[in-house]
Image (cartoon, rainbow, N blue to C red):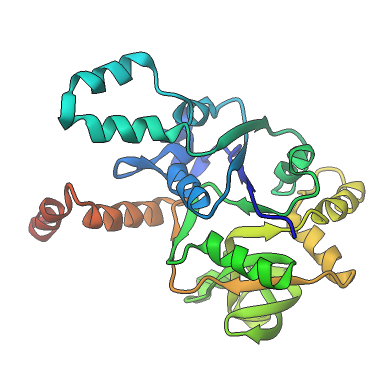
Length: 296
């Protein structure tokens, strides 16, 4: 059984929901207090044992590459001159570029979330891998990536990470998996439906945020691409449907003990920043005081 050591993060979008802020800065680099969104995701992957992280980007995403590159000499020298006071910052900055092996691929192909997968096929080879979004995440213990890897090691098949729907709106925002529940929170998937609405949803388990795919998904992506109509979107979900029709096993798993953070829209992003600020050891008490005294 192949060890999971590679992850793919699609990060080529324009972040139009956050314009004009994202005109020059990628949405993935929006800060959650003092750390960009994408660093939270990378740290989770590294903590789960991932060594190779492939980011599928566009021409406007150089800031991401710079962030995970070695810091410039001027910054390092400035921190060194700060002595012991700046040492924690120096160590943190130096660690960023050495967390993993970073590979960058420019996205090319039809619009849709299947394209980044095809762009990295030659780098994945015949290994199972993590496919994880760049603008949302789940905080849990153990992490969602560790939970998916544990399920894969037991069942040796693709795993779709998921959360339970909480509102009617959720059924119009996410894809949902249906099938037999073989363990608490684990569904042997028979169908996947994108944004079905509450009345048509096959379950209340939304597949969001992160997935573990076996390499055979690429053969099914080939089939989808061969039959893709001009102008149509290229979805990985269509490849999953072909896998299921071919009796390939796919599981959907609720990420246990987790909270989902969708930083891809303004309101949820601001909620995330506030929640993380309230937990930040440097500012939490002063921030709580500010919020209590705030008059709007």
